Image 1 (cartoon, one colour):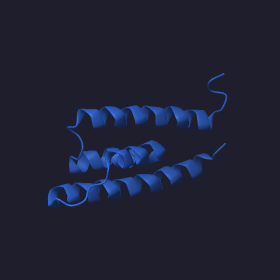
Image 2 (spheres, rainbow, N blue to C red):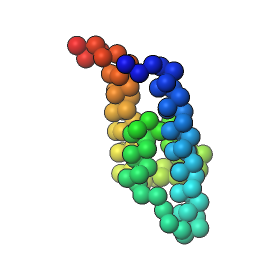
Image 3 (cartoon, helix red, strand yellow):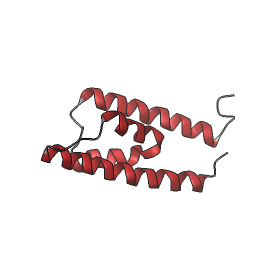
Image 4 (cartoon, rainbow, N blue to C red):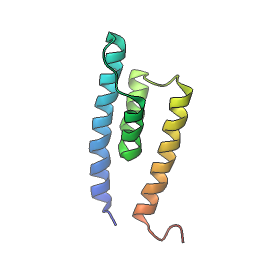
Length: 94
């Protein structure tokens, strides 16, 4: 079992990295430069960076109007939360 402290530190670091990548992608979209793929943004969210992704979406208003992106994003958030509960309590599903 992963300790709660280690999990929180991991989530904090990955959320910060994800936030920065969203910020860079928003700047790239404004300037017409190379963009980060939606797949990459989803992978980062699924791996635990979804709080940073959510914060970046709200602050930068980035990817908020794309229904398909938002659908997949929220599905990944739910799966991530379920996975977190299972990791913290392996007997949860029994």
